Length: 131
Image: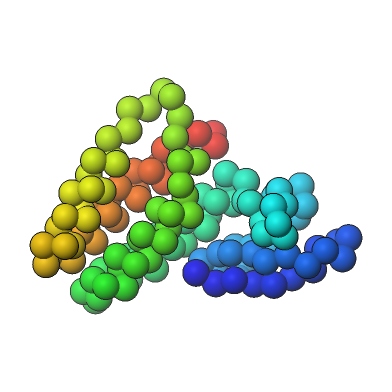
């Protein structure tokens, strides 16, 4: 995850966190400030997490399981529970526990595939919440 330092319109220094620099060009209307860190709106968060998922897919494609798992875990942490809405039943937490067990059991490939699938599900839930 990249951290980009910037100064917003009123001269306040902030730190943007994003998968890539082009994802973080936020206006003050699109974000909230918290201890000079940007809290992204749902649409910007969706774009950022989608970019992280694409990076993880590239690592999966070359079977770099450690990097893929790390990227996906970071994306899941950044997404947090912001994807959640009451209308959708969410069983992704249990599957993520299974992925942790797969990784501990020496199957980082299985863990990456399960985590990737759960991140994609949560990302889709966030997308449907934005509509």
